[in-house]
Length: 187
Length: 279
Image (cartoon, rainbow over all chains, first blue to last red):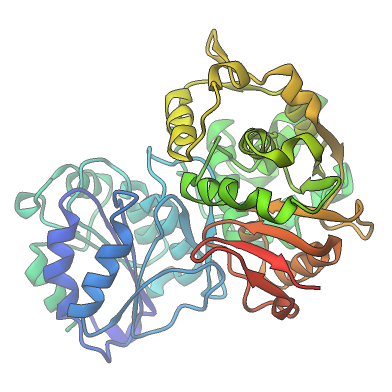
């Protein structure tokens, strides 16, 4: 178990196969969940808006697209807008940018994770789930280096194992679990 | 080409400040009011690219000679741009531009923070198909000399030209793009007439002086690079530079409503960041 009250933020990186997982995973969080959740999902550029509306209708927490310079607040689950990198500043606000792709991705999970680990250091929980590339594998190692907690969806149970496997191989991960058991760590 | 790796050790805020001060004292660039998270990302990419361990090594590498300095400053400052980003916006813009420029004899257009020029050429090509083009004077500015020279030259790597051409088509563009942005030997070289249509010059959006009054300002995806208080003062400055009924275009995710003075603007197109000054 993780005592969630010791943490300030959860970041999640998820890619191919992610919609189905998030549809099952995010509704498990109660509306009074004490920390915000920030997600980079490699959407198809035109799918993001629809997916956010759909998730908002079936989750207890609010589902939003992250806005530039917005204060990050508990009770909310934020998604990176398509075609922008999403970063967290040290004053816990978002910044967006249109810099070059990282790991062939924009938004990139590594970009979010590095900036989040700089901002939250040991008060951060990082999660990597299903996906088809290795984006996030460096970022999750960095979260660990900064004292945060790292969690990876068990590659054997992931729809696409490449991304969780790359994360597992990058560093010593604290928890490697099927999705259902991940939520159980803090709820 | 797009593969960037950002592994490196912890960069503190003090490190960033140290490097910013170095650039200011040595080269007279002002980065104090830029988003620190974005600057950190760029520093990480630079350290990795040049195989440097930390900020001290970066500073001595940059200070070593002019070539190093130019490369580092270019990588640190250039805002990555692609031709015809956000084609839906461009389509909406093209459809309406003649309506609000019709009464004008001369249409003065400004593209601040134009970087290496791609955004300026994007708009020049979009305008090319409108009545407005003939009567327009286009000024593009940046605070960085190196970028201004690159913008004037109008030569870019062509590795993603198919996507660029596709975006143009998606924006509803009807011109023969192979004449305006011809692809040859792995480069795109912007058509000479188009290059001559735009006047590139050095100017910093942060400086006190303003480069005149304009009917149209294109400022997409530049505001997000600044910290919030700087965003407010930049928007106020841009607002001052617009003639009455002038139009300001911002990026898809750049919001306008929280800035004092926004009540003097109306949104021209639903869901698109195209704002007209009322008075």
